[in-house]
Structures are given as C-alpha cells and as structure tokens.
Image 1 (cartoon, rainbow, N blue to C red):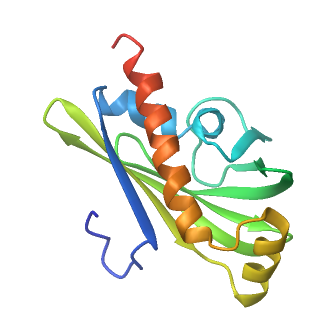
Image 2 (image 1 turned 90 degrees about the vertical axis):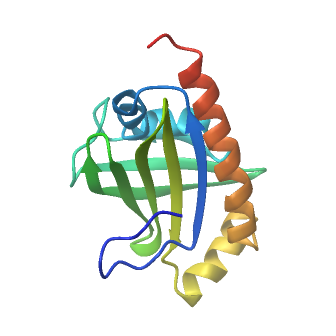
Length: 162
C-alpha cells in the first residue's frame, strides 16, 4: 500500500498490479469511467459524462449488476491528477457508499496501479447494500472483483501497442 497524504484516512482495501504500459496511457484509461466499466465484473456501464479522462467535479452514473441484482449509483470525481491519481465518490439515493481511487507510479519499465476502496457506508447503507446487491460481505467481494478488474485492465492495455 502506498503512503497516504497527510491527514488522509487509509483505504479499507488496496489491490495492485504492474502494467507494461506508459503511465500517461494507464492514467488516461483509469480516468475514463467507461473503460473501468468494460473491465469490471460488477460495473456494467456509465452514463452522463463525456468520453475520456474526467476532471474534478464531473458527475457520472454507474449501472451495476451482481447475479440477478441490479442497481445504479451517482459518482462525483474528487481527484483527477494526470499520470498520478483518479478518484470518485459513490452515492446511492443520496447516501454515501464508497470512494474508489486509482493511484499510479512508475515501477521500472512498468506502471504500478493501486486500486483503492474506502467504505463510506453507514449502518443503514450497509443493510440496504447487502439486500439490494446480494453481497453481504462487501470487503471480500470487492477484493475479488478488484483483482479481476485490474487483470482485465492489464490484459487490455498490454494488448495495445505503445
């Protein structure tokens, strides 16, 4: 796990991967939520935002699915630092759900990508989420899906010429 900025709360979960692709291209991919949805086993699509990397303050909506369960969320970009990090906060019915953050750094001839999840749910949202998504243990579930997402991202990016 990387060092957090002074005063920042560490994420609840961090999964990392090394990608043989230039950091700028990797950042452009993770800062475009449509791309993230194409790699994730749970996120199905995004709407409401322009294509390409999104700036701070951008709003998009995510459509998600786990088995027979489907739900939509509102997301607000809270960090967009080219070549370094991209983060967005997720809400459902106006209630806080999570912060998703991608932190990037150069690691030799590769880019180290850390996908970070911070659980922002209160007690009520935890109960609503378990029933509404069919996922009672969100941390364990997210660790698996984060690994799948990063593996798919690496395969996609490494299949393209730099």
